[in-house]
Length: 407
Image 1 (tube, rainbow, N blue to C red):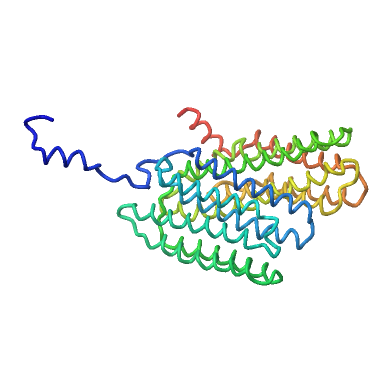
Image 2: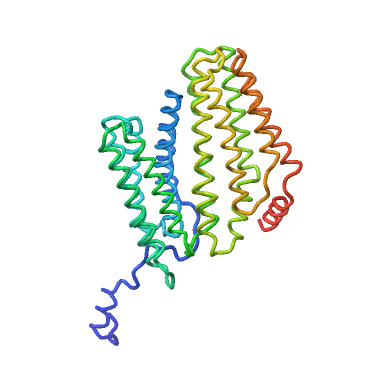
């Protein structure tokens, strides 16, 4: 102890921990490993939905998959907003995210029970995940200085309606569960619309785009795992090898339609938008438009799962529809996201998808092996990739050139 410093002063400085660290990030940050860990559990939930869809390719089965898929997607996309401005290196944020991850795992594992008498095993962890996310989102927003916090209160309050409907559906008669959960989706959409009115949300465009891109690539990878599991577990045949090979090619081509140039263009246009429009744009281009994109992966993966089980038999109409609709949703939804962000309308994509759909309808009228429709889909996506590589929108080429120079 210095003889020139009073004892009281020394004691005060040794006890005072200094300014308390908030849970809001002081500067923009990239995606962290705790977020990736969280995302993996939700992709597991997507694989559960894929299996459920593949085993029940009926109108009712698909509707149920859409309902569960939306609830799971909405819980995940809420955390893309919650953790975007949060300091994910903060101990409290990490602990809450990991607790939410554990609850989400129970939710994901309970997807097969969602429309049984044990639906509560799905609903309770789902509500818990959402409530933890809402609580953290309010806390992070409250640390935003000089901002009007009314929007986050509107969002959190209105979201409780949808959560109540989810619980009511799980506790009620299974016959009305679909109706109540459909109403919960409507309540979610209303809450998002209400929260976006006259509100300026503080979002890091690069972080939001990266989170969605990572989710897409992990989900695409899961579709390849289905094909790989078939090769590993079944006796090899020419039909099986051909179907799996075609599935891998299609998955790689789907990757190219999103990550070849469009994902970077989405991020560039989002970052260049007026800060006052970031909230509505994030909601529409990412939270909304990426849901059918993920649904497309589910449809494609479900079709592949059924095809590798019967590689030498013609595709049933339901499997053929899952393949065509799934691929079309993936490719068209990414184009929709670009359009929402002020990008050009990708007419080539739409025209090729229409042609692909007509070709698949013709194939469905005759008995042909699965390799034929798979080849039609692959050729269609090759045409899209090649056309956009040669005649990519000028704005996208210029933006890529600027980013390359900056790098």
